[in-house]
Amino acid sequence: MNAFTIQVKAVKKIVDFAAASGVRAEDLYEAVEFDPRLLTDPDNRIPFRLVVNLYEKAAQLSGDDNFGLHVGLSAKLNAFDVLGYAVLNSATLGEACARAVRYHSIWTDGAAFELDSTKQFVTLTYNYLDGSITSHRQDTEMTLAMVAALCLNLTEGKWSASKIQFTHREPRDTTEHRQLFRCPITYEAPTNSLCFATDYLSLPMAQADPVLCSVLDRHAENLLSRFPPRNSIVDQSRSIIGHELRGGDPSLERVAAQLGLSARTLQRKLHEQHTSHNELVDHLRHELAVRYLQEREMAIGEVAYLLGFSEPSSFHRAFKRWTGATPREFRDKSLHL
Image (cartoon, rainbow, N blue to C red; front, side):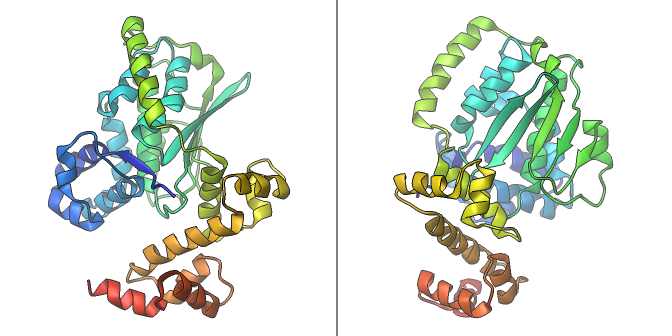
């Protein structure tokens, strides 16, 4: 299964912002095992989870618990290349949102925007398609902070949010969150999303250039054919399973219900893609087990529990099947590398 990727340029804004807090780029690269030589080619794409992890490590090393929020507030659309310029030159906020949703995979296919609207409200949801990502608070807050700040700035202050939702736990101090979003914020919610009045979709964009936008659309459509969205039934199922594995219910019935399908229909659709629910669960458990065991502070019994194994012995047998080693043998070896 192909890895979820993001443009290597995503690294720059994280490293630059962390440098202002005295964090050396070399320390960040080492923390996530990133080879900085990849930065020399701007067309390189790297694992999406590496960048999400980079945000978390930057927050830790800088001592800035709201690191993602601060990066989002400082982000410029031109940092996102064609995607950013296409959004920037849209005629209305509605067109800008539509382009952000359509062209997002040009930047990364590890997450996707989804836009739902009613007569009264619009909800922009940020979904992680890479179900193996276990911690993403900083990336999530960066993304929704950036969206909120840009909507406000590009409509010359006429826009405002009605409601914000985050799937992560409430931070210790939410003062800055409340100052930025100025609306009710819900934590440990089912989705990461931003809601605002539907009327705002017709707001004109302050910097729109329709001629340039037309040129950018043609370029973006060409890139989209090379980097199509990863929103297939397999990717959606992986995303749900990855979330549910961490204390939820990753069963076929639960996944199917969240997709609005019957269990039989989901199984058929997965079979058409040459996989199954059981294979997806097994694959993600393998990925997550390897990642968890590389964290010194996490007990092996806790890893088994987080992956949904009823008994530690079941986890040991599964891990031996995946890697040929026991969890203890794997951890000892990885910690001595």
